[in-house]
Amino acid sequence: MQSLKSNALEPTRSELARLTRRDAIIRLLPVYGLPILTVLLIIGFSLALPDTFPTALNLRSIFSDKSIVALLSLAAMLPMMAGRIDLTVGFGIVMWHILAISLQINYHFPWPLAVLVVLGCAAFTGLVNGLLVEVAQIDSFIATLGTGTILYALALWHTDGRQVMGVLPQGFLDINGLSLADVPLPAVYVILLSLALWVVTERLPLGRHIYAIGANEKAAALNGIPVRAHVVGVFVASGLVVGFTGVVLASKLRIGQANVGLDYLLPALVGAFLGSTTIKPGRVNVWGTIVGVIILAVGISGIQQLGGAFFVEPLFNGTTLVLSIALAGVAQRRRAVAQAKEADES
Image 1: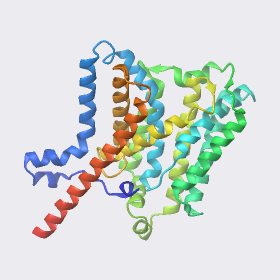
Image 2: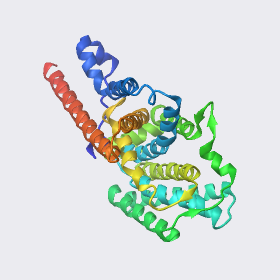
Image 3: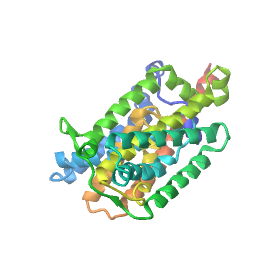
Image 4: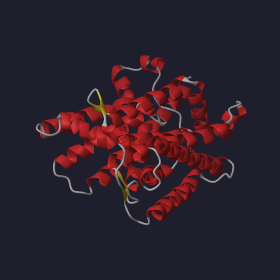
């Protein structure tokens, strides 16, 4: 968890001005290495698969399939900003997509009311997580693993292990089914949420306060930052995003089943962790998270089209995570050595 609490390693303009061009490029590699690798993968797969990979159909498929992962990665990113982790991003989506459908099919709720109920339950779960972590002082990994497992158990109990299915209103199906300027609506949600979170995290004091908590909680408290309120708040916000993602998934699948959802946990966490290795290496950030999700989507899509086996996706996710965290560690050590040299010279 230390990487979550590290300061970002992106170089300043004054630092780059003192370096040679070669050293500046090396210094910038941890910042832009992952986006460059993503572009190279796209070019490589496009050359290898000219009839299938660089097509509008494949692009729409990637947008549609990976938007759920992107939304969950952004949800996971929020507690990580404060140095915590939220495992209910994977467990919660199981419960929320089932509940969104069940309320309409079994209890005849109008779809807007069903969506509001799901969002309210998801926010309440986030509040419980925040209180367990901050008030009860339970480690966030353990607390959210516990609440997540409870949610999964409730999903199994609610469905009795069966699928929840029936005729859903068109308005609910349009949540996932419509497009805007030929861009699938789930991808639009990702763009809008990313922009909103970028403004909050990079342009508003609230974002700086949350990063300060993640970097040094005691120092943040001494500077008057309400640590408890902010930490509980990020868990509530994370819960809301997961609840909304569950609604989108329900609109996409049109059936509710308890064996769908947990497969999203690792990719979502991988996307968020990858976000701490690029753009602002050393700390989770919005655009880094999006780049992390994109490189996973591009890599998996290309490998599968080349004939990769069924186990390619988890293998690629795990390998990419390990390599990226290792690269971030190398960047941190290089930065520490450089700072030590500067201190000795001064």
